[in-house]
Image (cartoon, rainbow, N blue to C red; front, side):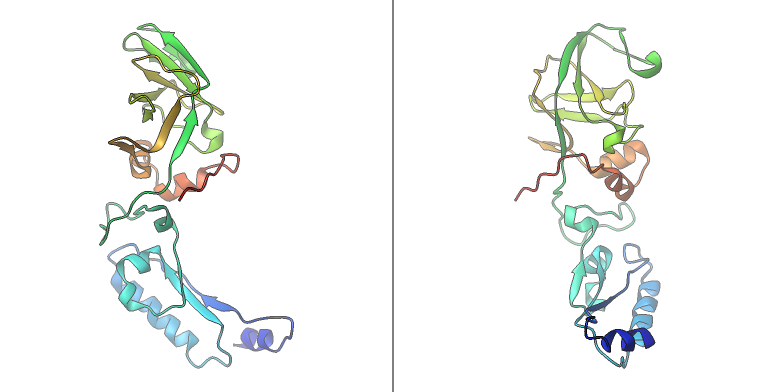
Length: 226
């Protein structure tokens, strides 16, 4: 209360907003959701000055408990990317369309013979004749270090797999048919009727979707599409 009064008394400051967050809004623990709402109402009741806006609805509240809150602003987090971050705990009450994709272009392509070793420790050996393509995305870009074996989608319709470990600045992919330099490879996203989701990557690497998304490095080029 004292802080609100002090801010409101200053000509150079604006009491713009008040907000909180919900710890269990993406879980079935509705009792704690109700507790946090009651605490918010208790603490904000009869304020000496009202803020211009209140905002305390995150993706979880807006998705599973919208009838419980009355707020000026909804702060969408992972939901903005069309992702259910609560899988498999909570199923979506409506359809989400994934909006995030991760793509790179092939910078090198060469034949690979059956038995040829690839990558650190020479632990991977080609199961049959094929081709090894290289893309300029590695764990310094935020792609998980333990992503070896993860499938990717090549623009020509092939499905490839990351092999030999994810390097710092690049990853190598084994494919059956030759791929031209400059061909687009989709690590997250859709190509035709095939798709790879953040959930797929999280399950493969035994990580959380939020952690994976937070790891994407600033040096990755961001392209906003409509």
